[in-house]
Length: 359
Image 1: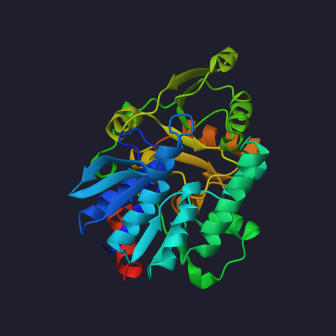
Image 2 (image 1 turned 135 degrees about the vertical axis):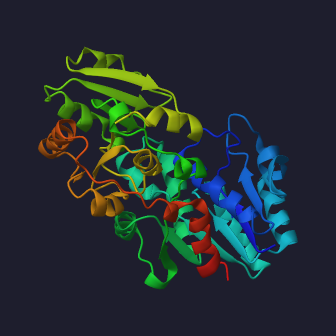
């Protein structure tokens, strides 16, 4: 076997960003070659030590390639038995540190795709116990310094990475996240059918780095009536219903096809993040015809700024955010659209890995 993927795997189609990256890259590779996806008995409240060490469950199969949930020993034995040339860690999990033991037995290259810099997140955003923070720092150090190649998602992400880790440029490669086929194939409704006063925010309002307070502070200064859609399973938005000009509508996360139906008549997608290496939901929303407003601290801004030059602002800049919203509401049909989405197909994302890195 040439490549084995390691990471988080969700059998549902309602996926977080890291889960989507893991699942889609594996699915695409399974179309061209037999592979294996390994995930772990992560939940300590649900699984005991026996499962975490020796557990074995088949949780799925895609194009003849299996998805296995394995304990640490079973994982190492399976990898040694299959003798892959590459182990690709497609999102951070602490259990991945044990993978480097297989280098004792095999000539294998280990790749790691960075969806976020854990040391940075623990320092500024995550409220974890001291013990968990130490475990995360140790694990990330091992994964980053011991991997043969590191893939990062944006120059912004690489800049954050360089604050914590000193790495040779030869070990670093830029990659991107992709779009599901349903987003590539659908057609936008056009302006005549849009809710022109609608703004969509995707993410947890309780996560500081997502910048929801920044968004609300700016919207409260507008005189325009706004319908603010928040997509987040855990939101409790009753506090914000008292804002005179804002109607808040909370919606649970959706599958890709449900998301397209929802987005097609909306007007603006915002990412007011203080930290976001690459936001897949922004790309999906733009493919549905929404106009993006995002911060420089959103990694995708490097791409978006070329097509929507006035839509990228700095985190905390209320004046620029209000100005962007007002201009879009005033002249919704006078802004260019980015249409070259085929380059973001998961097939093309995999092709980059396959042609340049899985030699």
